[in-house]
View 1 (cartoon, helix red, strand yellow):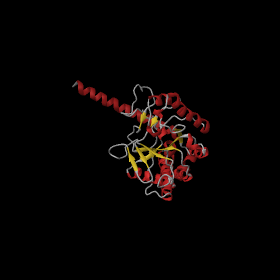
View 2: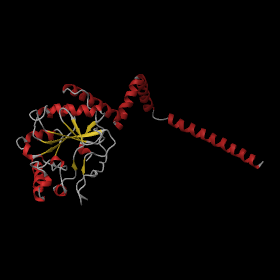
View 3: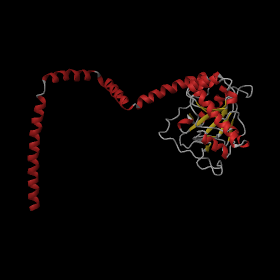
View 4: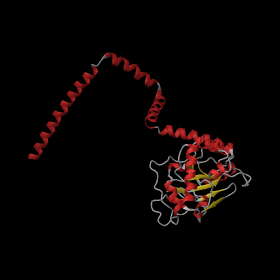
Length: 320
């Protein structure tokens, strides 16, 4: 019985509380209604005008507000326009398919380690030697070595297609036309070290390797304004002295390659003869006098392989 009476008291209390709330709400709404008449008069036409604009116009305004705040759809729209321009460029340059767009670069670069089997004895703390960048994204990286061929069509083609690539340069073949690689740098291509004279480095002494590697570091910095962070040893050959010298001269990593591109075929390092996420592709600055094809022919070939396999080309320096 006591329990029932407590419930009755609780109901009565709740009823009184509800009544008080109604009174307060009424007073509050009355105060709100007594606001400045000018504000009320000016608000009504604005509301009526907004209603007359229709739901489509209001939704468009809402979309613009969201895009201004977050930029998501705007970015997607910009990407769509970029891909449309790339499709037109692909048709212009004779590509069978439009190259796929690479995903945004990672906020934090992956940790690069030396590939198993590529270590040198006592190599702890030396620049890592690798053929693939650790990533789950279906991306590959295009790198071009030496600098012998200076085809202006390559610069125009890669700029039109917006395909990123990195150049590893040897002074003995670029010193007749440094300006060609200035144009390349100005288009956003990173210029890296491939030694002064392209020697077989393990056959040289420490001091000789230092001249080849550090000498090229100095030349590239003086000529192009920045000191390279990456170095590729000629033929992919190196020893402990190579990595010691590279570190001393400011090199942070030594990228080799997982596959090599030619105008008429691809060559593979791996047994499955296929691309993998993060693979580095090597090719060279070569012309029709050495290849049965031009630099644009080579790009058409490598991009056909990359795109058919569902990969995009990303910028190596965004990951290393």
